[in-house]
Image 1: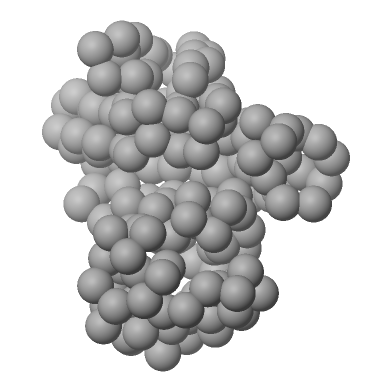
Image 2: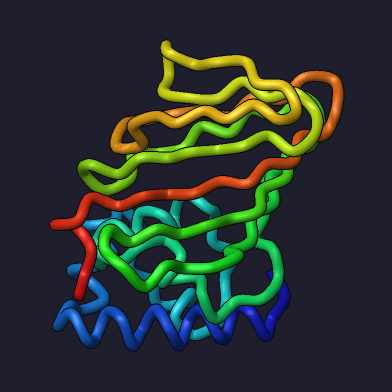
Length: 176
């Protein structure tokens, strides 16, 4: 992530944390990260992983897309790139993402907020995805929906995989 995007994310994260009335220590502890790492992130420094950003969004009780909405470049790590396309304004909250995974990539995703579901449509390549132990192999054009409130994974084979992914949050678990 570039410096400008990190600064934007940091300022947005700090505003959301303060709006919730949480101290740096409270949010860091709840998200399972060091207070010093959260402080650096809010200052526009550091290199947060996708999992760190997800954990912060869950602890702030905001959709991942709300936390990363100000960032216009794809977020990425370890062969995975993710970019928010749009956030719905109705209930339930629905976030739409573009995601691209390099060949021979395994992305283990942590559980999202209770009741969250994912639906993905594979645009190109081949992808194995779903809750750990219950994955499905997808080919271009296939769609797969599953409970995302438990650990899940994405695994590519020999080629890049590009997909459209939506996260549908349970109605009671998103802020007004």
